[in-house]
Length: 141
Image 1 (cartoon, rainbow, N blue to C red):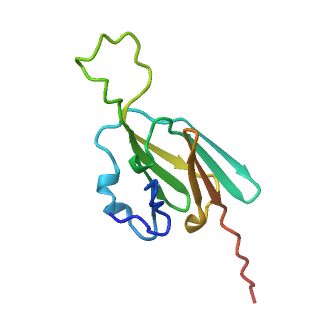
Image 2: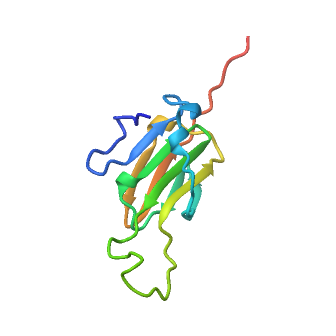
């Protein structure tokens, strides 16, 4: 599976894959066998774009992959547990932070222009700005 080099940020290596370049049948490795948790997300429409914000605190950008279709997003990744946490390190009293694989499908309320999305990770939030597809009017003779 190849990510689009135009949208792969070399510094953070966040991967975005577009539906028209890779079919779902080519994404067998995109769907994890085990899903440990699902991150919370907000979705809202502002003027001509949809904004999706996903809570990804403690997740490295290289561990996140986004599959972008016209009417949905698939986001998968992995939150790695700290190296000092292993079965023999200590006695656990409270573990609320989820670790491991996550996967989230987000259905969009309007079709978008996938190749025009803007993505950033800042302060533990993955924010995607998705331009809404413009209506095309066809004259009828």
